[in-house]
Length: 81
Image (tube, rainbow, N blue to C red; front, side):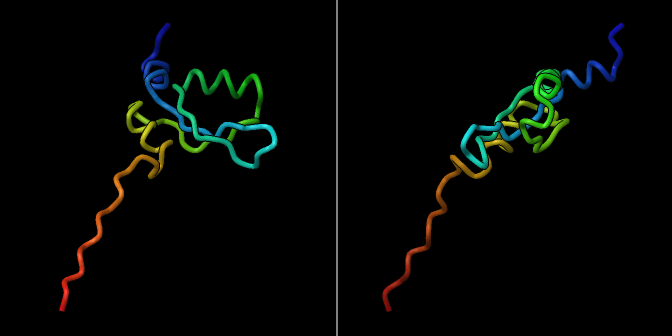
């Protein structure tokens, strides 16, 4: 039986920090809620959850990326006196 809660959870996205051997922090990664649950079941506590329940993949990708890829703010030109 497919309940609304199961349907809602399967459409949710997760951002997590992947564990990388030999490094204190790994890259941020994105997956759907079901994949995260499977990942966590196979290696509990191995990866660090940043945020769950994100409604869209695009929003999750932006959160995972942080400010990487953002445009560099353009400075204002100083006027000569």
